[in-house]
Length: 472
Image (cartoon, rainbow, N blue to C red; front, side):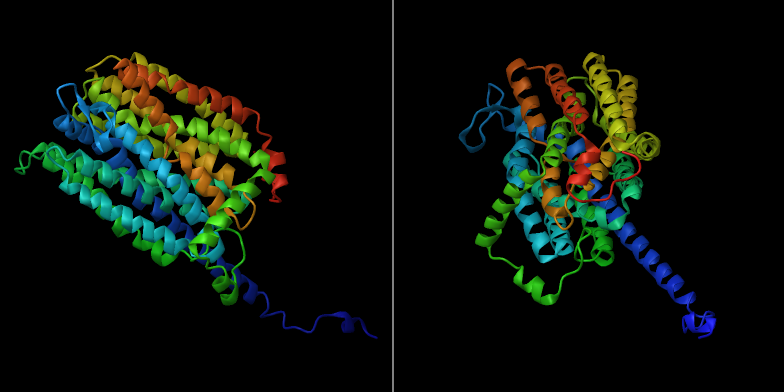
């Protein structure tokens, strides 16, 4: 037998082209999906920035004060609460409902593989509710509360489903960078709309608009922005998210459960999570410190207007600074994580949050320059701490269970925290001081830091059967 008999029978001049072409096509397809995912953050950040962070808190509080009795109380559902506590209480109430909605929808999405359809469907419901805020005026605080509840639930479910795409969009060592880039797109999109809204609000008199009408237009614009740009992920993302393999039509059909079986599956999901106690330990740490982060973000405008005496223009400018600085902060902390690991970088950012909160407590009133400096500090640690928390959690999820686990994660993400607003509202209810309310949030950062420090991340990743990144 000659030595040529051992050579493979192929044409060496053509074979190398086929894998190269296949690799290029796969890379282009991946970039296309990543871009669609980035634009989803670009789209929904309008709700987070314009509605939750800037305009709705002070405006809905003013609407509630218009409806208040002589004691300064309003009476939703027969309850008596301070008008100044209505907004944080409503946020908290909406999140309590969204917890069940996220968990149930995440379970259904993982079983049916219809992540995109559910994600975009909830996005459009939220966008419509946000556009409906244009009709919020006078003393119609109950309408504002109802629209906020619907929009915030829809936002929470939609974003939780979008997070489930991350494991399928990046290799383990690339997820910090991809997650950080997604957050950067979000802050860029939210910031761009805020620039337009700031120009509208500052020029409302020249346009013949009242300040209230200008605010209502800004609120509605966030819904329109959200709906318009959601078209990009609708056409660029696959139906199924995550790293699980695609399912056959027969399997998909058998996975379309009725409501009763969905609830039973949800119960099994919650019980099965106990099999991964280290993942739950990380989740508990995240729920604590990020609830503090989200409360600072969602109540900053209320704190600035009611306690520090900032006008609407100063509030919008400050939040715009947060959006701009957060773009660089997300990318910067992503780079730091490449060298020092995501966990250590997150812990460092939490120290930054404690310092920022303390400075906010002692900040003098009627000093916009100091308020802008505080906004820059928030932006620096905001994007990176959230982006790295999301990418780190993606390593701790069993393959094929992304939407279920990220539904729990989303309980304390952008716009969906509930413990913090509840503590914030109660502190104000008891003391009548927003300074006392803001400093009460320190407990979330301190306990969250201690809990995260105890999580053995490498062992947690190995426990769910995922590959371990080089740096953690």
